[in-house]
Amino acid sequence: MKVLAAMSGGVDSAVAAARAVDAGHDVVGVHLALSETPAALRGGSRGCCSKEDAGDARRAADVLDIPFYVWDFAARFTEDVVDDFVASYAAGQTPNPCLRCNEKIKFAALLDRALGLGFDAVCTGHYAQLVDGALRRAVDEDKDQSYVLSVLTPHQLAHALFPIGDTPKSEVRAEAARRGLRVADKPDSHDICFIPSGDTRAFLTERIGVRPGAIVDHATGEELARHDGVHGFTVGQRKGIGVDAPAADGRPRYVLGIEPVSGTVRVGPAAALDVRTIDAARPVWGSGRAPGPRFRCVAQVRAHGGLAGATAEPSADGVRVELDEPLRGVAPGQAVALYAGDVVLGSATITGAH
Image 1: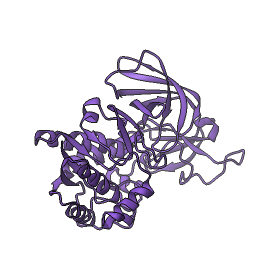
Image 2: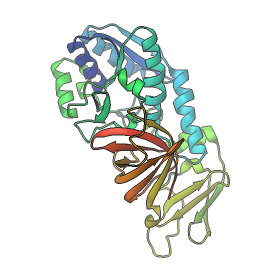
Image 3: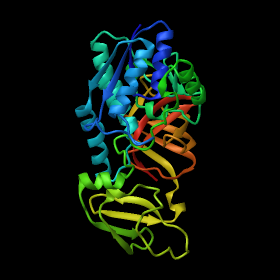
Image 4: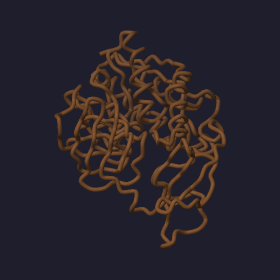
């Protein structure tokens, strides 16, 4: 096959490209320039898409002796990922930018261009497996990225390669060292790639501005404090809420709900975070259709953790998920991914939970 290897400049994508070469594919490497300030250097494990990353990707391609290009997707990334991230927070939602990047950039914009140029597949360094067309969890549970890939359609999965999903991360690093890849010991990226400072609240405030509102007690309606914008909060948040006085029972307060129109942030006890029913819209099914009118599964609401047995009931435009046991920190804007064992059945965007 003719394969386009997306090379971020990290160890995972470099080894994935190497394995594609070993498999006999005709491989071309491409680095996506996603940052509007690529001259900025990353700080350790923060940030990505820097000048340093592009150079690391190019050197890895040289070692593998494959053609290498840099494609400028910065404008598309800003519109589909960064602007979406900002708008979602302004609307009181909690988006996952990695999931959106996979959906809109790597397996939409990039894949479309690749297919248009005659490539058969896009290869990435994601920790996930494809078996008989089905997306499955990676062998390395701690690194598994099937959740953030759960938005991919059958068409996109049919043109994807995830060569390292069957290998633990430690072995991937060791393999990179054996191959002479300088990125073997490069730190993994953490946090949100386009916020290298790690200060999400400051990033959002700079773009959304100050929109004052009230922090109120969920049970009594009492105003406890003021805030500068709902974008500074997420459901389930405990630290940095800005309420000095402890609750009447002396226990910590958590963000329970966000109302963007009124600017109200509701806080209360941890027990009030329990969710047993999730409503979600815009489902994407790995096989192209729902497994049935009502089916058993495991629901996952975060990239790592947040799992519970469940019964899912698809409708014409969404899916309702009834959980066997409560989950906490479930917020609109997140994705709920549904699994049968280690197989991803599909996912949908959470619109409500109770």
